[in-house]
Amino acid sequence: MSKCPRRIPWPIVCVVGWLFAIAFGATAAIQHIELADRHLHIEWGNAAEWASGVFGGVAAVAAFGALFYAAREWSATQTERRDNEADQARLIVAQPVDPQHWSPPPIHRWPVVVANHSTAAVFNVDMTEISEDVMVLHLGGPSARLSRLVRLPVLQPGEQTQDVSVMLGSGHRELLDETPAAEYLVFRFTDAHGRRWQRTGSRQPVRIYD
Image (cartoon, rainbow, N blue to C red; front, side, top):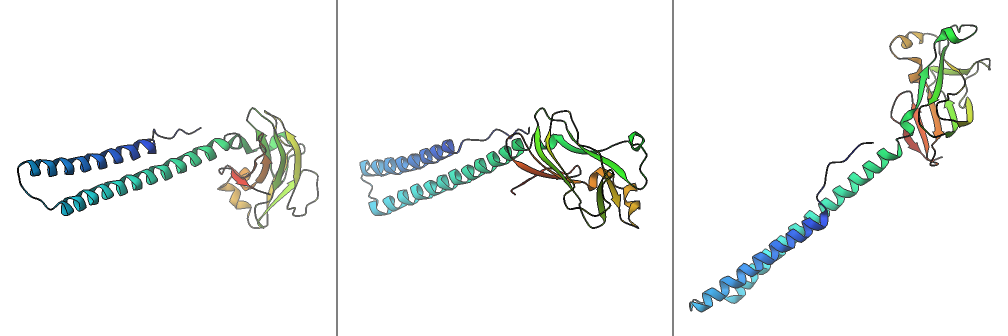
């Protein structure tokens, strides 16, 4: 969970701005009274306009500052909320399986699972292909390209899905030398709060609405 830096509450900014405005207005009034006591004449209209201008300017600055801080506060709150919402989703990961654990060992197929490293169950886990260059095959299943491979109704904490395999099309197998097979897997799931997420390999989870 990320922590946002301490922010100045926007009502405080607004109050400070108004205090400055009142101070400027009071200064103008005191100056007028002192000039009157000394029998120095000043055109009150000009002083009033000056005080009004200062008051209005400071009030505008205060209003702008309050609006700016309110927008900043709202944006930071939304970012923190989204980050908190994805806490569980970041712990649902695609990870490779040692091919030696397969029987018989795969040929040109790389086993991958989706594992739940969180403390709560997730639901409706779907695993799909990422592109035309990649085929995701269920072990023992058909060799056709599938848009939806496996849906596991519930994935409990500490458990993982059944093995699936990533197989690259002809001429693309060398890509696995640069990118692990698990990075090609696209999977979706619903977290414990009913939010639907999608991840591609180890990329950050993305909220989806389907």
